[in-house]
Length: 112
Image 1 (cartoon, helix red, strand yellow):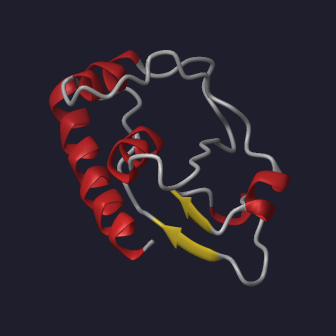
Image 2 (cartoon, one colour):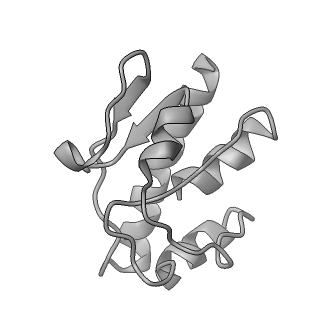
Image 3 (cartoon, rainbow, N blue to C red):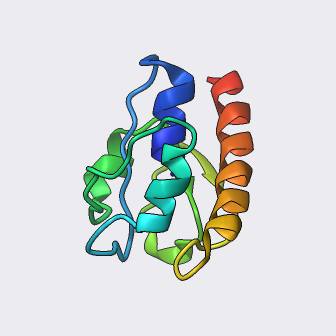
């Protein structure tokens, strides 16, 4: 969700990459539905494993609960967002999570 929202709000001004430490085999269909409500298509995305190189080349790294499993490099800007996991949640709960992430993404875009 964060990557889709960032692409939407940044309008091509930033390069966005998304990955997880333990990615699912597919994007959660309830998340896809919640994002479709905003006109943001993420259904074709494939979850990817977080690679150290992706963090090394990033200027800003946003994590969501990966703790010690995320690579850390000096001089990078890190933000750890504590957000509820949408896995197993109904659409209403996922909308709340989406809106929380959306507010954080909008604030981030303002600082870039």
